[in-house]
Image (cartoon, rainbow, N blue to C red; front, side, top):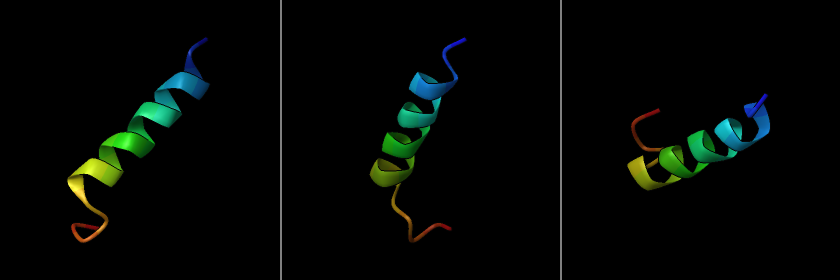
Length: 22
């Protein structure tokens, strides 16, 4: 159950990718 860790990783990825894409 690494949902929390996965969520944090996703958040970091999004930050790195850039919220501009959203």
